Length: 191
Image 1 (tube, rainbow, N blue to C red):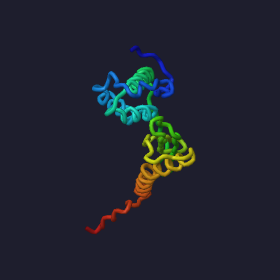
Image 2: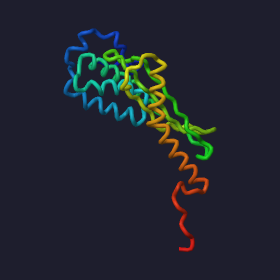
Image 3: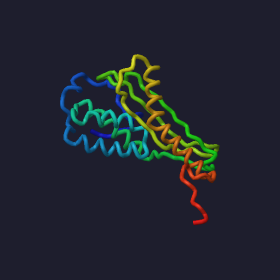
């Protein structure tokens, strides 16, 4: 199949036939290798790929024609956006920076089990600073009954897994720059 420009890394599952979800795909034996390479790219610098890659990673043990089509779409997108890079800039002292955490959720985005997906983005921000630090895309374990519930689950997960640990680290770093020792005892100058 040829590669052509596409606007998104995901294919709309409603465009797939029902038989696509039951028949074994052509890439059954190569799928894990290809998907893990794409996952590396997504985790290192392309958060726009995470949802598509994660949904494919959940399919490697039961690869179908639908997964073949999804992977083809992802590779098309990656090929035609390979020049996209993540940029950041730092122009402030760390004392003048703070963390910003964004959380979002899809509601019942998975057609097979109607579970939602959590998304999060953690950045270091200042007047002249913007540095993406971490991003997350994770299928929720519970079944939400509304989009509001899915959003609350996402906010809790992102805050707990990414926000609090990063806040503790930033506070310790800022304390060290202020002259404190971040909980480490000062050495005795007499010794």
